[in-house]
Length: 219
Image 1 (cartoon, rainbow, N blue to C red):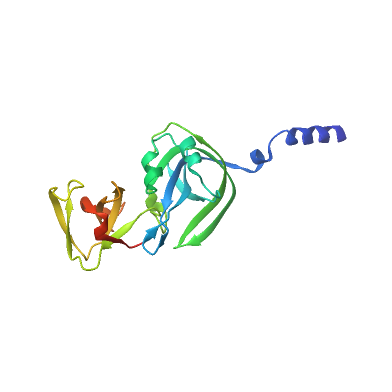
Image 2 (image 1 turned 135 degrees about the horizontal axis):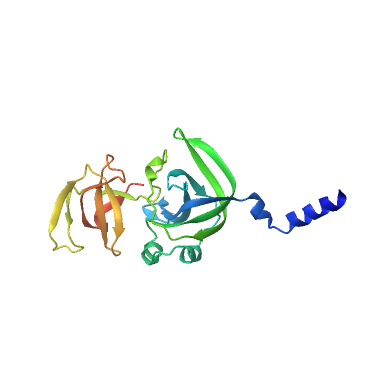
């Protein structure tokens, strides 16, 4: 009996402790920049969350990753899509399908829904074209979203079809509306859309280019 017990202990100790404790899940890893505003200056933080999918591709839950300081080297190593604009402009989000190993999975209740948290041990990228539904999150569905309003004193502004003051106008928007930033073009110009709560991604119409100096951040 003692000999059998010894053999079992040897077998258990031959495996890493992580493999005994970690929960392995398939899905999509999302990296995003969380806006942190102070005195109208954004100092974004790089964050991760994992969309757990069933074998049939059905979305089950979203797990916020408490991974400590997430660095750009991790992004370049694990995301197959080009990450240049994502890292250079420090905005938006990118996704990569794969398999993740997680530990310390916990949950809290916020906004009448369950919010999951975990620590990441390992991520293995996979080739797959999977669609996500960020709308299943009870609150803060789009943590990377940056919104703007017109600066005080500007009543109406024209969105343009090119990042140029002489470009064609695509629509006039007054100061009663909020803008969602779609993309930074350069230090002077943004591509934006009118915020629309009825849209799944909150991005409405019209959409166009606007000078950054004419806007002030909301979040």
